[in-house]
Image 1 (cartoon, rainbow, N blue to C red):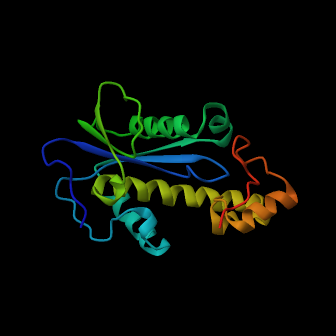
Image 2 (image 1 turned 135 degrees about the vertical axis):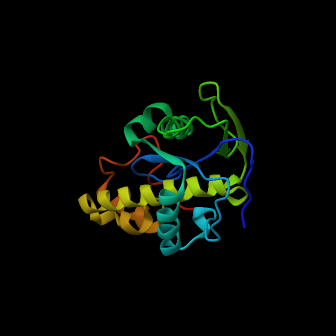
Length: 195
């Protein structure tokens, strides 16, 4: 069972999905959970099956005090780089919260201050604190749905399976077909995978 960071402060967990993808947007989420929130299936989104993630997503959406989603597309990623785009996506997600949190818990070790709200960066925070894990689930499920929509436009790359990440098949199809309009041109799209 993951921990609640503070029973006193209004805490918003923040995480992103799609940072390592070669395609499409980076998506961030920010989530404020009730102090008494209790759900055993909430965990780092990468540790959950798709079915469990989708179930957890529904629970979080229905039971959270507030949540926000921020999206930065591939063109902006190419302009400002993926780290800055990830932070900007988190800022957008936080701005959509209906309540101003007293503390932001950020997954990872990089963040730029959001207004006057205190923040704490926590490496592997999605494995430690429930609000960050909840944000990781919201971001991942939301982005996966976006990638399935993009797959319907360009189904040769099989984004419905790989979600734009650099699998051998995905790299091979980029080499064969060239990049799509949704590929991040600043990324090394055809770099060989080290095995």
